[in-house]
Image (tube, rainbow, N blue to C red; front, side, top):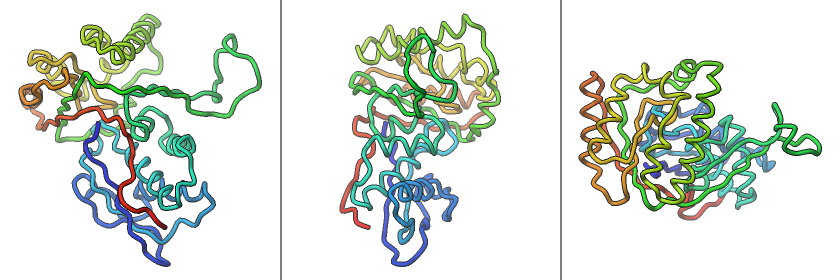
Length: 297
């Protein structure tokens, strides 16, 4: 769902890699080696056996930082894709995905950022290994296994609180173990959500958005969360859920439906809880990362 994340590059002969002041949320990003776009690009160049130097990036980002909307994944994918384009496209899509996953630590967000569409991605191979009853053969190196399809029947409204929530804090709110019944509940809902998205079944999607594994534990960190969800549904949303680690709340609406009443109601519910917020109207993106203009190194 494109909220806009653009990595612009410019050559700097003989200079070290660096970042120019960005725009939007990109203005909050570091301008040195701590910039995640630069780190990702340099990792990709090392994978290609190239020296990571002689370029500058400027990031124009409309994805709020620390809001559960995948800003780190888009930065990583932007850096890897830009580096690959500047190197003449030496890396395959699978190789770029592998680099991005290693940097992010999991495939959940970088996979849709790179490929677009509705994606399901898991890590195969160690650590832990698969169920020994499922497959035989030698141990495998970790790799990403994914599937994707395009979604055309829903649009998205996101309510973004003004105060970010650190991902680490949100993760610490989760328990180390969960009841078996809750795990079964969520496996069923996750499977149903994928099928409902593919089939365009709004009624099934509303059921599939129910959760017992993370929202009950993270909701106390997001004042007004359940009121925001109820407000979205009252105004016609199919359903709503915490976006990633939070604090943003994402509502799914029928394609072409008016987003404004839903967004206004969600923001009002946040404000009733003492939290300032704004809302975004988005459409699912089928392209993923794209290269525009001439890319030369």
